Length: 92
Length: 394
Image (tube, rainbow over all chains, first blue to last red; front, side, top):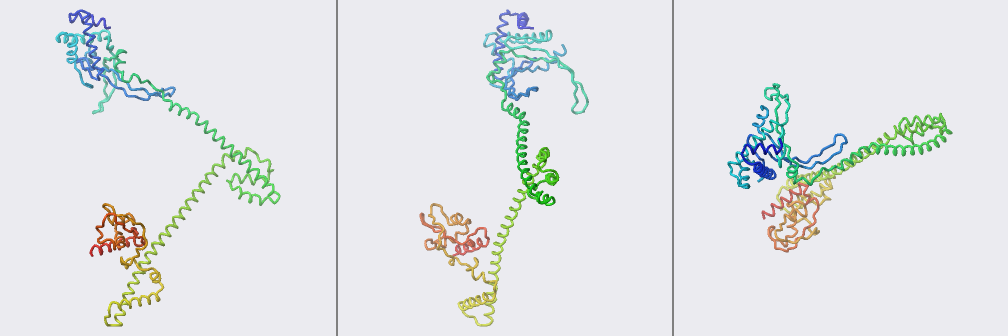
């Protein structure tokens, strides 16, 4: 399901125009992004948590050539599904 | 604001503030949003939200495991898992603090691995050099041996082996070759043979010479240690001897006085006794050879009085500053604070008490014999303590 489809379905459900739904969705996503950029964890009930995790720097070795590279640290957005979502997906 | 757990309610409030939408509307909106997302995930297996990323469904396979408590084997059933792949824009935004960093190939390690590869070659090169050197040496030695053997072969075969064995002084293999040489022609000693020698003989020779050196060093150390022990023993022995002799002298004195008392049978004055003592002393000295060193030495420390000591030789002169005490001076100059008594005695004309003295006063630190102010000598320290008592008791 792509974004367009999502907006279509959502607008019909909440009885709002597609444009309105789209802007609402955009502001919501923008807000969510901001929270993530502030290193906050966003908890969505019955769905899961979105958070930012730091991967430390590490030495990686190319298994064939034996080249060693220092991989820099990294901040990553991770999603952890809630138990309810897991249940729902597995049963459905 | 970092590391907080933000709920949808908080997000909803801020969205409401930004858009001016009613919160009830937003609540239904968000509820519906995630319902739609879940439905989409169920239907397609993926949902993309622009500006955020893609949610995908993954199948996690079943796996075997063990119940930790009972040790029972169980199978964890497979399930579906929703994973999230952020959009590139979001990913980069989140990773902004570290974005300027890029993977670095570590060249130092590479270089070292390169050298590692070269190491065997280097070793081979070194070995080749060594072998060359050894060969050159052997050629020289061989020519020397050749001349010797030529000379000795003229003299006689039986002697040659004995003679060469000593100057060459190498391992049996070499000796064999040497003994073989006279029988064969000297000039035809084959190079291969030498080469073999170079491989086998020279290394042990080096080692043996090294061992020789180590043994020599150990021997020298042992000899030095023994010598120092002897010196120490001699010194301490002499000290003990002196003490014993001094005690003996005292005993003899006492006996003599008793004798004189017996013989005279009437109590004379102390002076006469002392005079007698000295006479008897002289007699005993004359009689016994053992007491001689004592008579040469002025007096034992225990007999010395403070006033007897010669303070004319000065070590240093110290000026009294704030907080100076005689004990400190003694510690500085003699190593032990107990020896302040001598300093006090040496400056007795200037000092009224050992405790107080005016600032700026020049205090003479006398140079004293080591027997008096050796802090490692318990007798010296003991004597100083006795003097201390006497002075403080005064």
